[in-house]
Image (cartoon, rainbow, N blue to C red):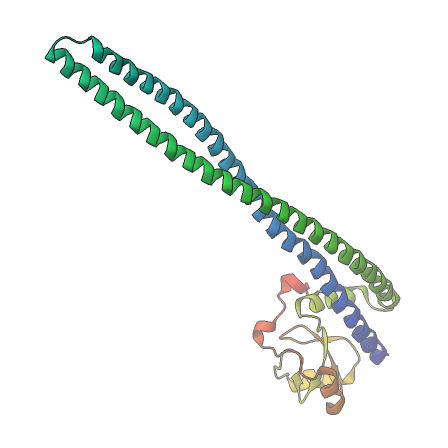
Length: 264
């Protein structure tokens, strides 16, 4: 009777392992796209900030050009007044006004050129960002479509696995199934293992002799006191085939009471 239970648990283990792996994949897939979406959002934010700088720079250039035109007119007016002066003092004063106006005009012209250069660089950067944003949006849309297609296929496989699961679990104790599911999930798909040479082949911890005998008797479900996996007794050659090179374990392999729940 117990041998049949162990066989069902091993079958259930295969189903649960695949089921949990598919669920993990479905959960992980969107995270890849979310990372790209975060990068895209940062790029869009940077684009908006640059666009604001472009508009501000345009306004600044416009203001500088108005001041430049005023400075140029002022210099020209001073130069016209040269024909009207009659004294050396008037000449010296007007000459200073012309030099100051010329210097101001030249500085404003340099400011305009500097700001126009900044505007050109910002515009080029905006153009590159626009292309990059478009490319990112296309890549994300394609990735989302691909993930949705893959997830749809995975959901169909999950449905089939759940149907297989329902063919097994009605014949098993509900509490055992609950604990077993948590063990398989926390132990990377390995929830039932044989005892070999008085050692749990799941965590490789030595077990007390009487406990090994109890498992060998096979009159009830026994959990490893160290890793909480379900144990069964098997001849050494068969046990080797069943476990092979499965994960090695230690006391760090324990399932906490919170993860597994109280065991009888």
